[in-house]
Length: 150
Length: 150
Length: 80
Length: 80
Image (cartoon, rainbow over all chains, first blue to last red; front, side, top):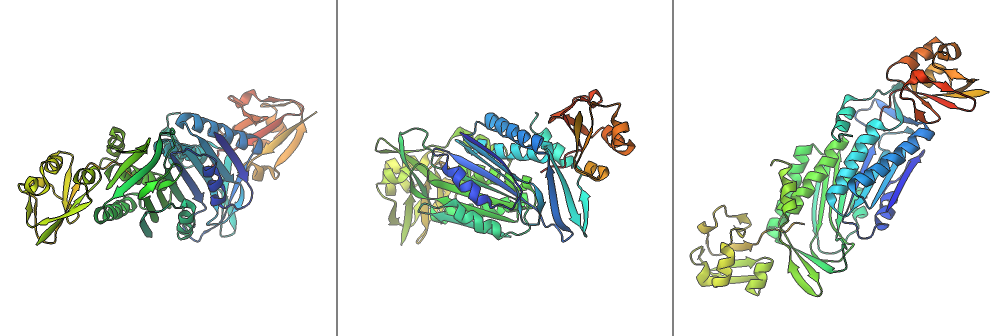
């Protein structure tokens, strides 16, 4: 069983992480992977910046990863998050879970993403028309979290 | 928006499908991917064979794919299934969904997998100690399906 | 003047082959006479479905396949 | 004899810097005097959390940081 948590300050290729991660878990029944990217909903978002506070963000992700592995009886979990300035189309987050059964793998990714999006130590701002704007928490994120009763 | 459905009779590398699929959907918010493999729970399963009935299996998958895209408002869906004889560690099934928001992508994969596992036209047998045994439907598969109320 | 009967999975084991040409028409009541008692009994199992040209019959006792039709005997699916 | 105060996100904009060294000890009641009224008001916002050496205070009015401690003012997280 392996847990990998990483914070990256430069663009990454999800496939470079998922291939070796999957290969490292012979005997798995299923692997579920989610990759979130900077959306280009419209042309107004020119860039996105994610700030973190290293001494809290990394331990928080490690604790979330350990909790996810225990709750869903995973064989392995990979959790990679970008920080810094990103542009539309760039990956922000990658979560990949290996389990003996598919339900565990899929639910683990769902759980980890809900918690990363709403309870992790990241602060976000968007650049629109040359101006940076801080993003407030979304109500939807809290509703998502309430699904897990934790 | 693109739907790709394929039945393959030889081993495949999921990454070869997912990379181009993701690249083909600029503007996506998230992509969720599930890969199921032949488990090696124990040493007794030497091989697994999946049979299909082409004139029903392929249209059934295409209908499921179209239904999944509509229900979860996907930008794209990839659904690849092996048939024939497979060995532990080989991928059996790959489902990947691109959506503007993560919940749609994750739920679409969950939905498609539950339906592929219990309502698609596949018949399975396992080889143990040199003998092939037909696999009956599992109660769990029907319980999984009941979650979707369709 | 033939109907193709396709046997899937364990029904193919029982039939000893994957498909068989039989004279048209093929009806539910004629199944035992054409396929033999064992296959007719398996076809009658409530979990066995019958499809004609890829369409599952809602009522398999209404089977009435003509020349050129393909009839498939489908055991319960075991999942992908 | 110093406490490092770390400002995150919009609080860093307000402070005009990412961190500041202030004399120890740093207490809740001393915050306005050390950081100024604007930052103290932002710290008092119910959604602002305070962490000492990476541990969030359950009751931020109990703040009492000494020499070598790192105090972080944390606005609401906006998600990854």
